[in-house]
Image 1: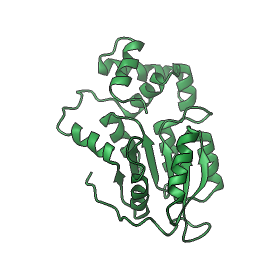
Image 2: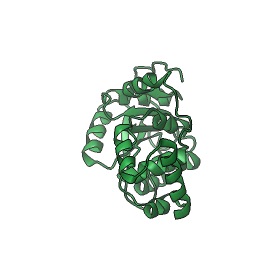
Image 3: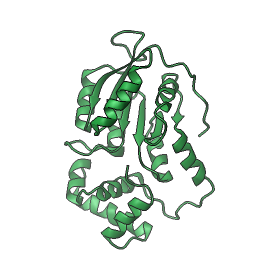
Length: 232
């Protein structure tokens, strides 16, 4: 995916009605209050930007989306808790229900295959949490003009993976999500409830993923997730 530098000037006009036409309305979602506070202070120092709602779980995110007209969603990928699944399932639901609202994802995931899967979900921006916070305003400027923005850390990881042979049997997005949730500490039954799948289906997806990766035990799964940046 080619990268183009977005305009350096912050966005000045809303893209989806509701409120001051000169204000860019942001929904900020992250399960860490300190992160939300820091990001909010940074964004609201920029002219024309305002955070109109915050969320700490997917449930709160979707409730805010139903309540507030917004121009962009800036969200963490991993927000455990509540009845609604986070991660790729959350992104898919956002895209289905609000296809015209751009989404920027913040993540600690360091696995190139996971990052590509996130991009394939239809998000317009992807930033690593270790990227400079100043990149947030650049990302918002890009998506305001319907461009995709990849943070410096994300581009570095994807560039480093170029030319590296892909696994002969790569994980499917569903297998990746099951392995991510299992590695985060959820049981197969809990994953099934969160993803609204049967326990049998989730168990099979977990076992299929382990077979593809040559993992023999749950300890191997945890070690793989840590070593390959699967946790976000």
